[in-house]
Image (tube, rainbow, N blue to C red):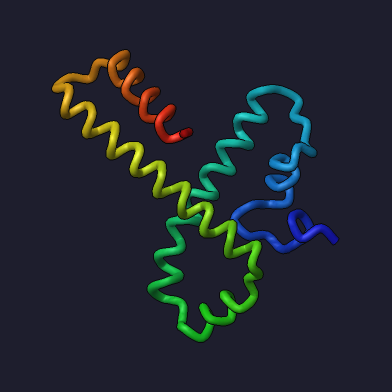
Amino acid sequence: MNSETDRPRGILTDTDRRYLFGGTDYANEQSERDARYRIRERVFNGLRDLDLVLRELEGRDLEQVLKRLDEDDVESIVAFAEYLEAAREAERKRERMVTTLGRQDNSELEKMEQADSTEADR
C-alpha cells in the first residue's frame, strides 16, 4: 500500500493525488486547468481551516493527531512553512523596492530581483 496515494481523503482527493503523481491524463487543457484550480482551492481552504483546528480542537485530540505524524510528515510541514515564509519575505522585499524606487518600473524591479536571486544562489 502506497501511503502517498492509498489513504483516506484529506485536503486532496484520490483523483487529485493521482494527477499530482502524473497518473491522470485529461481529455483537454481546460479539464486539466479545472483540476489544478480545484486543488488550489482545496489547499487554500484547508490551510485556512488550520486556524479553526488550532483554536477549537481540544488539546487531547490535537495531541493524538500530532502523535501520528512521522519524521517525514514533520519535515514536509516545516518545508512548507519555510516556503511560505520565503514567499512572504520576497513579497515584502519587492514592496520595499517599489517604495524605494517611487514607481513601479517592472524592468528596474526585475533587474534588482535578478541580482538578489543571483546573490542568494551563492
